[in-house]
Image (cartoon, rainbow, N blue to C red; front, side, top):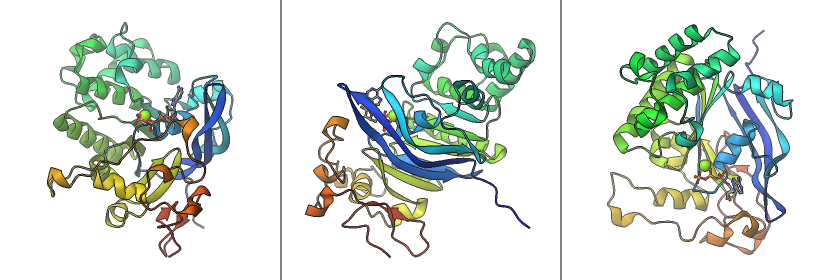
Length: 329
Ligand SMILES: Nc1ncnc2c1ncn2[C@@H]1O[C@H](COP(=O)(O)OP(=O)(O)OP(=O)(O)O)[C@@H](O)[C@H]1O
Ligand SMILES: [Mg+2]
């Protein structure tokens, strides 16, 4: 009898609210996806679409009093991790799910050495001695290709370049050999060459450690080079999900089409880049129904009802949340 392994990370119907001006608004709406070992799922969308809030909800790190999870379940390797006690979640964070946060300078402590910060999760989760944890920190810095790791372990974050700080963040996230890595815009602040190096590094670490990766980015070029599957998010909704080549070959939701048209590509001139008009509305100003309708060239009367996320292919792997373009296969 064969048993199918549970996904490394499973998110079902995750719904999160954010408080703004004393009202709670849905900022992540009914988001579901699974990631298996060695798979990279990319979460894409413009600024303010709910990508980071999805990650923070999974990690139970929403700002208290401002964010709250109101529905859904998150499991890691088949074990429910949403709604569990803080002390239990603390054991899972860092040890089973590593996270690279969007802002390295706010996540790194400026008054602690880089080496200590990489070693800290090992002291906390693995009960290593200080000496053993620091030795492991040097190995981790080597692993993420920080030159002269043994010397640089005593440096402080401000003594590192942006690219090197990003590597420190990755080393911290991987210190306890988690099975899942959530990387929130790990390369956004970096120039293109360093960005490519950090992505190549992530891909290599993923292959060697069998990691399941949730990669958050607004950069579709990054998605094309590393993702197996893509979730396109708008206004807290997953509006389209597909295997990576399908999304680029058959973009179907008007928002996905617009994102792709706005993407700079080497095979076309910059004049053909069409920025998406307008911007993501604030949560308090989101339209009822399809949240993209206020910017959508294909809007119809029925868009005031929220469309379901429906499969558009016979295999049921490509899903679209649109009344107009997301018809049944
Ligand atoms: N702490 C907070 N307080 C108030 N509103 C918030 C807070 N965090 C997020 N929001 C709001 O929730 C929505 C989703 O934010 P989120 O940070 O998840 O976006 P994002 O997709 O990660 O964007 P970016 O690409 O800029 O990182 C936005 O409207 C944002 O203004
Ligand atoms: Mg973000």
